[in-house]
Image 1 (cartoon, rainbow, N blue to C red):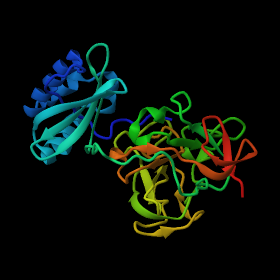
Image 2 (image 1 turned 90 degrees about the horizontal axis):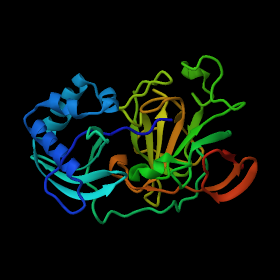
Image 3 (image 1 turned 30 degrees about the vertical axis):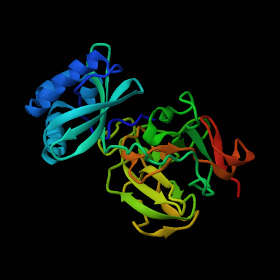
Image 4 (image 1 turned 30 degrees about the horizontal axis):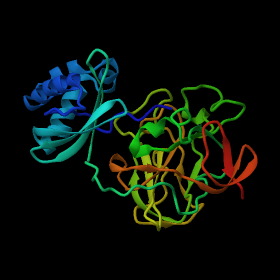
Length: 320
């Protein structure tokens, strides 16, 4: 499974605090000047090799000129907020918008990761775990590829907006596919029914994203085809990487536990067919804080567990 790449890409900076790294300050100032002068080649030249692959030169120009500058304008200032996950976060004021921005530098002072997303309110309510009773969102046995509360078991833990999320696959005889590994249809998860894990309302749908050839990811439509549910307790569930044109529910629709939502796919930032499942405190994933997702009664490696949070390496299915 591939980690989520930047939802958007950008950068920021101005002003020092005792916690700011001078290398970040200098590189950020270079970026700010290049961005405001529409010198996007200079921005591209600041990227490391992986960033250049994720956002090639022509796409860099299009992204910063059309996706960022056209709606938001030039950067006026940046205020340092915190150091997190090895990078710096800044509240960045554009002419027409305010964002929170995170970026990383490598040892060579190259930009290795940039994220731009709506600012999180300082008093945003967090969600420790679900209060709604949940069942697993499928009707057969799946395997937890990423899951748990430690980074060793679950890389999502390092990312606040998808903290404690699961990546789930189907495994038969120790493999996730049979035959040609470049065909989605050969993966046991592909096309499997994904069902509602509880009574909820459909509040957001993303559809029409093509399924990837396995091994090739779409780093711009990150969640791919997606269904977002809201429970009666204002908990939000994200079910992502669904199969193109397989979603059978509509925004605003009320669904019951076990009701079919879509089929598992390989869309978005996904390297092979799997289901991304997460609990969060708001509808917008870019502005969310993740919470722990426990299931009421499930089989874990063949044994019944109640109120259980699955972890990496376990085979899980509903107990009834």
